[in-house]
Image 1 (cartoon, rainbow, N blue to C red):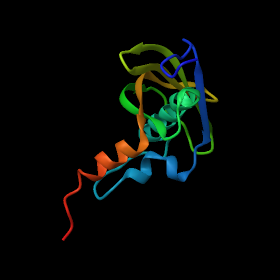
Image 2 (cartoon, one colour):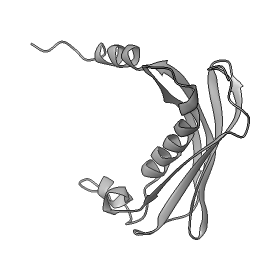
Image 3 (cartoon, one colour):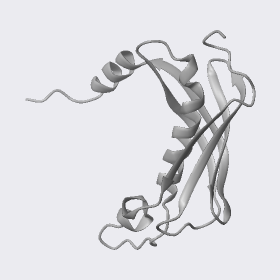
Length: 138
């Protein structure tokens, strides 16, 4: 299989038990109030991890996959202690971008779903480019 080929339906998965650090309430700052349920930002991260795992067989030395776009709905609340599992299922290519259907579920059923796009990049080039965005210190 060449680097640009991934079988439609190829899937990656990631799971976690919701802990205190995964709750929306830890995002609260002065004047904010968020509930003690699984945060949308953590759900999104788990979805990205799941999709990235489907791309691992395509990576060459020094490469990784990065998120390009995510359109997701978080549709149900998950309490601390529950296990959440995210799945990223490869749908198609859009140029050099890999398109995934992502979903997350807890023991009560689906909690979120969406579309996620990822690209394969050279780690060093990405990190060098990111570093150039910082103003010089001095």
